[in-house]
Length: 405
Image (tube, rainbow, N blue to C red; front, side, top):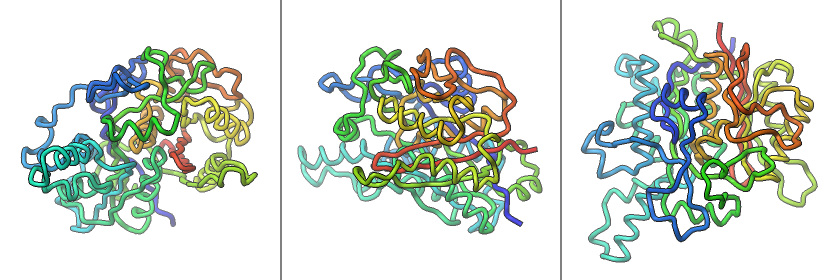
């Protein structure tokens, strides 16, 4: 019999809310976390808006000994992992030494820390470079620091598929649970709001140059003109259902029922993008038909061509306007490696409360063949949700989450 993997804990740090319930309340209220960049002087750049996590004071969440060796990204990851474990009520000290692993997603690593130390090297000399530069920038640093802090010595890893990475990490966590490990801390948190993290995104030509925060990131809108970068994400505790019930877990958000990943073919190959195939494969993995899905949390790139391609993929899989679609990331920006994990957490909260958060700031789907939830949240009897994500470079990922009995 196949092991059932469920989510028993959530930890969220998002631009519109620090902590799971604050984030969820703000999302349902349509409160945006997008505003002018404050983490560095962005006035000389064409894109000057970002989604920054509010009110995070590292000293309140991170032991002082870890502060010199961690980037802002890793501090957010450590805090959200702590919250997720607390939410799950999981005492890691009571489990077998190698019983819990850590799998997270990453994009470019801790670029803010890396930029600072390289600036020290260039301007002051090698004697002024922190010894922690040897690992603090590394793309696997979140996995490592979470594992060390909580003594989680089970199978660990990191997935580098940019925006799709959060789903890929959760899919990998489910694999480990199915192999017999009781739980895996998984998801993604990212933070690249610094020049070193900004310029590569500008180079893609996909960033919004709109200066009005309310109009800057509008997935599926006729006024879509690019995306707004953000920081933060979500860490989840994926756990074997039988073990969770045996230990008396206080709540179960839902089952990780299906997962799939695909890679787009090379441009000019004549083959279609892989998003629709990822969605169909995830549905098959969950043993579901398209009609069984109650809501889709879309990738929602906010780039006209990409939005059109996603809407066409959804119409291909489900039929035109056949399922409610939403992109609540319009309130946070795209969080790179943290984005898909946050969408997965949002989908689980939607299942819990029977409400679909809306795509704030967007009036309509601009002729796209999808039933985009706009204007206000929509109450619904939700049993299953499909979460989609696309990463720069052609990565596609799809996750099906299902409400447990």
